[in-house]
Length: 97
View 1 (spheres, rainbow, N blue to C red):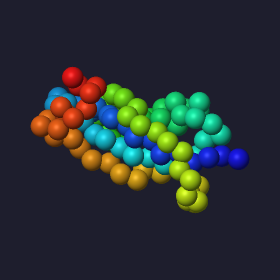
View 2 (view 1 turned 90 degrees about the vertical axis):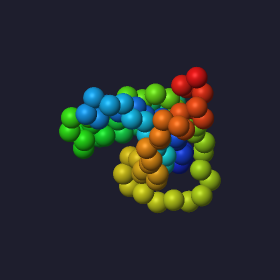
View 3 (view 1 turned 45 degrees about the vertical axis):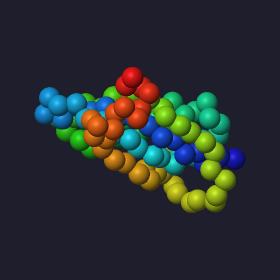
View 4 (view 1 turned 60 degrees about the horizontal axis):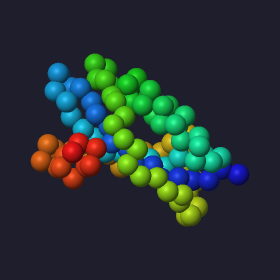
């Protein structure tokens, strides 16, 4: 039986030769946590297909945990939250220090 995990990603993206950063929160269904790389790769490929002229890079897997609530969805992943990160906030992420 597949379990539901929440994963939090930090992404980098080049937009008009300017680098911007984005934090994304996804819900995924996995047989076990070892399958996480496959779903992240699928998400990154979908991002690039949906956004012409933008190159996305996975900076870091910030966090993941198993969700105990019963949530129904039929797609491989469900994006719950996404936001761009301003340069003044980058100090909050150890990946940039």
